[in-house]
Image 1 (tube, rainbow, N blue to C red):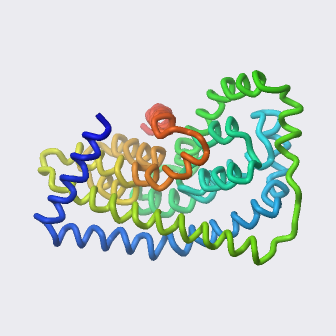
Image 2: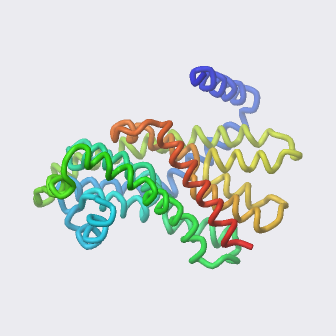
Image 3: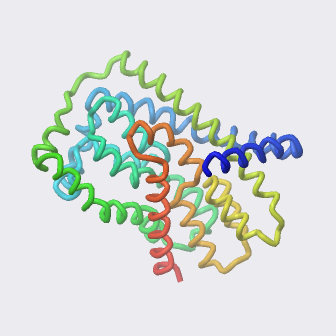
Length: 313
């Protein structure tokens, strides 16, 4: 079934590029500009610096203040706490990028990495406030409610699934011993060898992200061929496909404001299939399947819908 879906998707994309070359070129150029102007200068330095921090052990040291809370409350290691922080503050796909780097170095258990990967990969606060709130929601909703809905949803999901995570830990070893073992990270001074490795890994990952953005920009352009009568369905599908274009399309809908805002916040909470595609290889390195990750994002989006329905009237 999955092979049939992929075959149909890429065959239709190939036909779209042949039949509508101008639309295809324009959408690919839009994706390239988004990558070059926004993601390349923001994500690549962050990936390089994060790689150096993880290799040197400084990441775990920086996470120590919050770890004093997450250790006892969520049963996380200091390295896991760092991935949680960067996943909430730095945007897609920095959360799973940090976890994949930690898994490569055996600095975090697979169980903890899989648990965190399901909910620590989120939009950045800068994107949420600058692009979603002020540009497309006209600042009519208080920032507090937007932050509560978009970031409260994954945190609530993390709390709900923490019970199962703890049970798996208890089945393997005693919690206190488990925590101590995970936090034995040696601290070394950063050097040029670490920087070289981080630059190579960062360029590799940011190049793949650029390819996914271009590809999903073309997918979004294909959805724009749907007739105007299906504008709600079309905009919702684009929101599921790629978050930046989707939020813009959703903001143009002529529907009640409360429903529009719920759809916008849902798109921000889900993150888009493009972001999931960017994270796919990293998810494989962590040990979480695509189906597991999709179920987690869908559940988080459902929680965001409920929160938005209560908070936005």
